[in-house]
Each structure stands twice: as structure tokens, then as C-alpha cells.
Image (cartoon, rainbow, N blue to C red; front, top):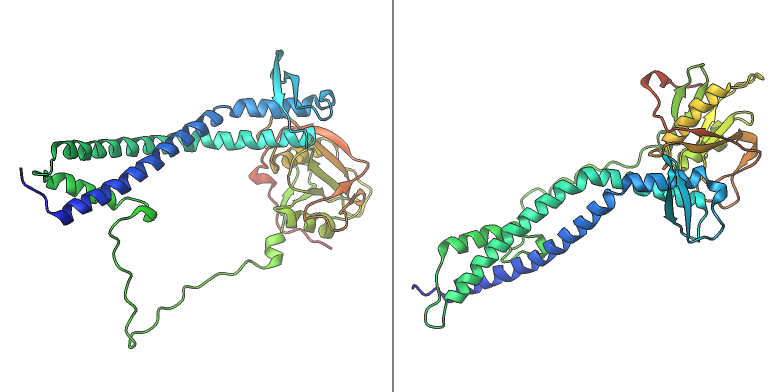
Length: 327
């Protein structure tokens, strides 16, 4: 056996130690991803919880830690739903819809990440096993030299996270006095306020113009600057979402029931309840909607509201409108 020199042995030991720390991190990541996958597989369950809470809202006792409600998709089956007593049943429903949407994304994103992490963990285990076997074959009088293993260790070290890198290259030396200083990369500032606040503009099948806020600040702009007192104002009930306004113009004409249902489906789509089956959407006239003093952007209090059940639906391209005159 050929004795490996001390610097090479120190280098091997240093890299192996860093790889062991990385392996521990990967093992924890695998367990976390497996937990995320188990959560993702409950997406349909979370959505049913949210739908049941909104469908049987009046059957939810106040300050209950859990409630048993019929499954909206199977009346012969009951659902036991855990609740946060600090918030309303509507907010609990909104949270379940949000968890359902996150879980659906997880079903697509987590499996490939889990497979890649498991493969990396296994490859690292094999490499560290070779290190252990070499250490066991070594003794004080004969320390085994294995150039192939050292080369594989060096290659693995290049893939370590920056916080675990060993033998990093020195920092780049400053440029000479005669060299030109690097040009700062151009930075884009935030878009103009008017552009950031501009709402979505749509037209219903019956020709009614509709404006929809894109953010909390955009909702304020739609509800308190663009909307007129006699316009119709809509918002999904019990969940965060866009403020939606049906423009009535100056006449006494009223949107039909079909128009309100069509626009309500858009309000449901542009909300955290977009993954639900059917959700309640409230509507009233804009003059009955106000923002409390000191409230956050997008916060309103409304009166004389009515509600309609709507299935979230994304507007079609044929519903897109050009710029509507605000006069």
C-alpha cells in the first residue's frame, strides 16, 4: 500500500466532513418534501372542507374548534373539519381554499424535487461509504491512497452549497488604477402609479362594462375613485379577492340576473376561492360601500348587500375590453 501524504489526507478529511454535513441537510430536506407531498395529496379534501363551510355556514357553531358537516359532493358522507376559533367560518373556508390551491401546485412541483433530492442523497451515501471503507482499510503504518476517490470527492465538493464549500478560491483582486470602473447595471424603478393601479377591463355577454382590481391598492382605486355611486359592486364572500364593479352609466337601467351571475363568477375567479366549486359572492351598490378611517388598502365595509352563489370562471378572451372612458 502506498502512504498518502499529509496534505492530501487533510484535504480528503476536510471534504468528507463537509459532505457529511451536506448529507444531513439533504436527509432533512427529503423528510420535509415527503411531508409536503403528503399535504399535497389532501388538496381535494381541503377544497371540500372550504366548500362545506360556505355551503352550510349557518350550521357552524360560534367559536367551535371543529364541526361535522355533510360533504357537498356526497350527502351520505360527513366531513370533520378543524377550525381556528380566532377567525370566522368564512375566513376558515378561505384558508382551506388557499391550502387546496397550494396543495395542487405541490402535486406538480414536489415529486420531481423529491426524486432529485433522494437521488442526490443516495449518491452521497455511496461516496461517503467509499470513504469509510478506505478509512477502515488504513492503519497508522499504511494509509491507503485512492486517486479515484480523491477525484470524486473534489468533484462532489464543487457542488456543495457556498456555506459548505472547502478550499474556496481567494477573492478577486481589485482592478488596477488605470482600468475603467465597471458600469453599474441599469435599475428599473417601480412602474408609474397610474399603470400599477389600472384595473382589468371586461365586457359581459349583454354588453355591460366591468372593472376589476388587480391588488389591494388597485381595489381602492377601483372602489373609491373609478366607481360611481350607482354602479354595482361585487366581492367574493369570506375570502380575499378583487373588487369588481359593473358600470351602469347615467341611466336607470339595471343589469340582468344573468349578468350579475356572470360577473359574480369572475369575482370568484379573481379571489382566493378560485379553486372552489361554488362560492357566495356579495353585491350591492357602490354608494353603500365605504372604507373605514385608517383601514388598510382594499378594506371596506358594505351595507344592504345581497348574495349569489357562483362557480369561479376565468373570463374568455372575447370578454376583454379596451380602455373605457371615465367621464
